[in-house]
Amino acid sequence: MAKRKKAYYPEGQIQKGLYTQGGEWMFENGVEYIGDYHRYPGTNETFTKGYYIKDVSEKLIPYVNIENLSEKEIFQYDKIKSEDIPSLYQALYTKVTPSEADYENGYFIRYFVKRHFQSIIQEVDKDTFSNAPGEFFVKSEVPWKLRGPLNDTVQETGVYDTNQRTTLLAEKNVTGIRNYITDYTEYARISS
Image 1 (cartoon, rainbow, N blue to C red):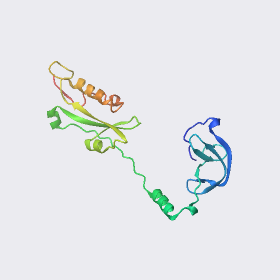
Image 2: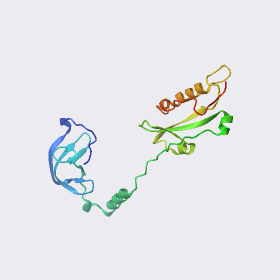
Image 3: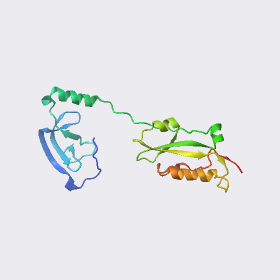
Image 4: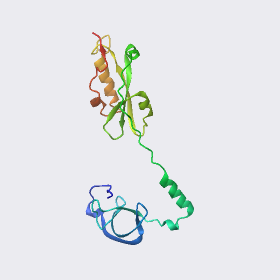
């Protein structure tokens, strides 16, 4: 029922066929355990049964006799146990389109977030970008050229080339963004 930290353990890393008569282990719900168990000293895990049986072995934790705890310790335990687990922040995808004022300026800022250790990149609005906590997300602001020639010329930088460069610069913060942004002329008004 409980999963082990690793899928495979070499025989030398398993202590099988152990037995407790009580006072050593209990279930996570606080019920004392008496019976066969096995341990994985390398990961400090202990499970019921003499060896691991998938969907049968249950995780054990060191036994604590609640009757011997002082009122202060019980109060501290109850306080910790009742704390709510904070919910994870979710960045919701938002496709922001440029305004006419942005076209007059010639560019606008696009905002991208990516949860740490995941490959999903999301485009979000400015508020979501600002509120996305750095401990959960890597973030990047990408200046997006809206007006000009398609490619660089002697007189002016091109929409395609500029947006490609800014996307490749954003790759340093948000790995994989160059696979997410593939249309460098998106929103562009190309001049000849």
